[in-house]
Length: 438
Image (tube, rainbow, N blue to C red; front, top):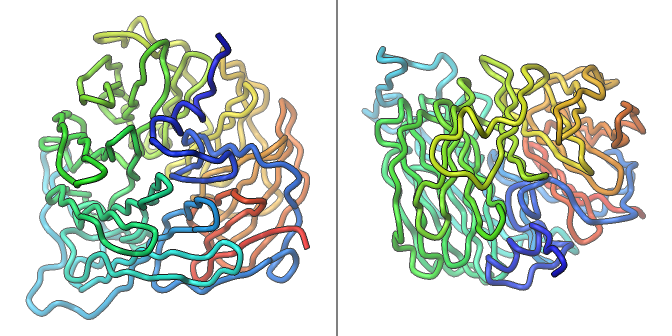
């Protein structure tokens, strides 16, 4: 029997006909950041090869998701101060009262939007206010209340705003249902884990503060009712869980500080666990070669390669290799053609053999200075990394570091790009850009 790719397995499990040119969730097909697209342009500027650009209201760091000729985005518009409202709830960190110095926004009203955009023209087809009012916690001054990327199955788009709720809209913009996970403490810096789809479920990783009330939950995608909920004693993380196949079963991998845990996505039952990253878990896991790769970049830099398909506590038996350099605080990494590329905060790339952890290079320095919060994407033999200044460095994939060129849209970028329908989509701080060869 011919082996079925993870991409097609996950598309089938989403109960929809998934085109290889779609980008239906955070990091695209199989949450990998890798597109099957070919012959895309690698040259653009603020005016060159920009098919269209569309102004997006407010602030948002969520990435675009694409199904056919539909693009979906979220955005947050900040309003007036709420009279008498305290700036933020109290938080605990390591048992002590904690107030993040960069926390802001909890004392104001906010309007949280879901937008649908025509992929061919950039026209906003509809814009729905999912939530309007005060928020339960602050955000980091460099963050957004619309940082979580939506997910779609081709019929419905599911937009998640953390404590402010999960919202299901059909493609015409009609609200089908909403779900409230409850107040989830974010240490005053905001949420980070985007929703994922499995069969008839929308799955949310709901970690909070010190982990006393953290849980992972499967919500019926047709009704919005909880199907299962599993408590997890894991402190706040910002990592989106990953679906991957392990032999004859699917595993849902949830990264974390204290533990990395695999669940049965149909029931929420724990399958195995391993010692966690002992650092802030922000990067989304990656899977391949019978392993899952989890990373953290602050305060410790660490990548673990863990064997999937186990049971119980695999901390001693399941670790294939580890590497303790080269990772970023925010950006996720990318696995492409057997090589694992780690990105650091300043865009420096390290390249490792994904099977063994052997280092191919560890100091691939981009030609532009800057900070990189956006996660890499790849197609063919090209890896794109985009800085907060809006510079995209095109790196040739392979065991030797080679920069092919650098492009800029002339606008700040925090969101990660999407690749779909022959276009590269980059969300800037003010606009969504569709990049295509003219």
